[in-house]
Image (cartoon, one colour):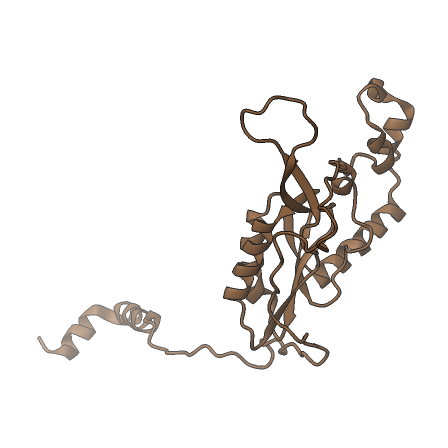
Length: 251
C-alpha cells in the first residue's frame, strides 16, 4: 500500500490529529534580552568625598600618658554602658556602618579584629572606612589568681572603650553598593561581644519616619509607661528606676 493509500485509509480525523501533534512541538527558538524598560539606572556617586586615609588606623593598646602621671584606677561606672546613645547615633561620613543595639565594652582585641577584617577585604580604590569610636581609655583592674580578698584595689589588667545602645562603631562608604559591603560588616557584627547590626543611611531614615508615625497615630493607651505608672499587677515591686526613665527599652 502506498503512502497515499495509507493517508486515505486513516481518514481526515487521523490527519488532523497528526497535524496537531506536529504543531505542538516546540520548534520555535527564542532569546531573552533585557531592555531599558527592565534595567534600573546606575547609582551616581557625585557627592562622595574620600578622607585622606581610606583604611582604619591602628589604636594603641594602652593610652599614652605623660611620664609624671600615674595611670589612674577607675570604678566600674556601669552607667557608661546603660541607656541610649544620644550623640554618635547617626551616620555622618559614609552610607553604611555597624550600630550597637545593646550596651557593652570593646577591648583592644575587638578593635584590632575590626580593623584587620575590614582593611583586608575592602577595595581601597573605591571604598573607605572610618572609626566612630576612640581607643580604649577605661582601666579595668584585676587581682591575680589565688590572691585573698582585701589589700586594696588590684593592678590594672587592661583597658576598654564603653559604649551605649545605638552607638555607631565604624562607617564605610565610597563608590560601592550595599551588597558589596554587607558581607564584610555582617562578619564583623557577629563577632562583637554585644548585639550589633548593619545599617544604611536609608534604613535609619525610614526607621525614624516610621517611629514618628507610630507615636503620632497610636491610639492604644496600653503601653509600658502606662502600666508602670498605674502599677498594673503590682509591677512596681520589680521595676527599676531605669524602667521608669526609658520605659523598658534599655537595661
